[in-house]
Image (cartoon, rainbow, N blue to C red; front, side, top):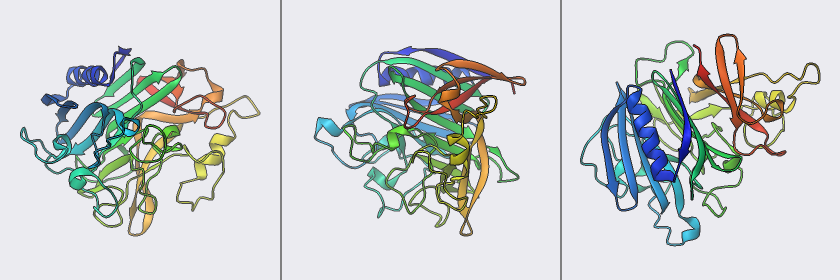
Length: 334
């Protein structure tokens, strides 16, 4: 596996850093094109195809024009597919790729109704970044202002049982997404999340999709009932919901009890993804490069060792009182 740290001048430079890092780690660059409002990047590793777009004061995802500069997004958008074409068409051509996941258009005002998610508020320099790749898996943590982070993760899940051959198990998840009412066009709670659950009853802020049973599980999409649902306790504060909660709340109680009174323990919990299958939410795997924990048990950027694995601990978003969650990135060991 490979681990890189550094800084970037803006969202465009950050995308270029991601490009060179992934190419050096076995991904094939199919296209890197400058367009009017940014850069589009297309990569694949075997059957996994990822498409990305960097924009500053534009909207790389939806059909909205966003004339007001207040609501134009600055950041990096991400969308998966099962193939590549060098001549994409449509209002947002960068994500109009073969086999891309498609929304139900009644849910979203997305250009071409094609799923995409994004990290936003990247209006200036990236103070620091952490990039990790291990085979098919990739994660990026980007400090967009002092102590404030944005995240992108994609790759093949560490699956629970057999879920079919690649690209089944191919997931894409970001820490924030389009929509909402804050100055960046994002909902305030969404700014605090990474790998937060999304399901058809709450489709305003889609930030993840996964390939399952030879189809994309995507909010407001097809097949009906297969809804991307990363299972974490990040978002909605400390409330320990029941196990049956649509927020997969069993982990809320664990996180809210960290650090433990005895020994100050802060366990590293898996960042899982599930789908609604035959009417029931079912976890199908977890991210191999990420664990969820509580920031109060660690300092920002602290390296910890668990067995043969080293982790770097960074805030989910802000290391503040209301949402003191953390992501531990695995940077060595396997």
